[in-house]
Picture (tube, rainbow, N blue to C red):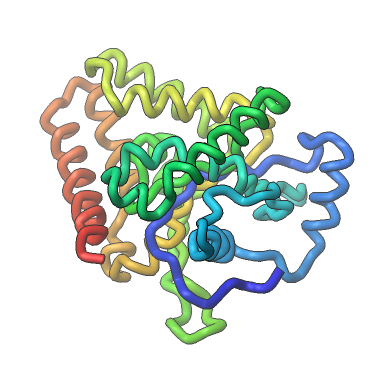
Length: 284
């Protein structure tokens, strides 16, 4: 499918799970095996552009009419692993969260109530036929949720400044990749520490939710935390100096050791860094 445009959409970050082909039943496994051999696979920016293009018609298309047949593909120790986009499912789920993110007049202007109501009805009917459906991708806007960093370590951090802004140049990349087994182990250890030292709250609730989500996938999957479009809006110096996973690990370790001061310092660095990122949303 051709690209919608070359416009860069800067605001989304992603948590993805790549499962080995063996995790998929036929005929889906065969589809992904053939898809993985394609030389022209689209990028996450292509998916975002398509979603934004759907908002241009009148009335707008809140959720794609058909499910995406695209995926992200990688190899892990010679094994092909895929992360299906499932754009339609994720669109339905995101639609349910919009009311908490946009003022009602803005929401109604972007997606009229009738359009949202129809999409909700479609989702409910679809869920009755697919009760166990879950996405392979989680998305956040203008941030990377702190609980995502619990899954990875600073040693798994990959940062590439890219090769410039010209069309066709390699874009910047900031991501972490870790085996599913490691991600689950870190979630379990992090939860033990947080529950032993903190009251219940958003950080614990969010980590519990992510942990349950990870349990639904093949144990030999790959977990990827990708800054996605944020690398296009943050200066290279800030990206190079961003070691949020290390700060999260340091904070949890300090809590485990009973060092509240060190934990507070690590948390303060995280709050300052990500507040500055969210402030850019107001400036755009």
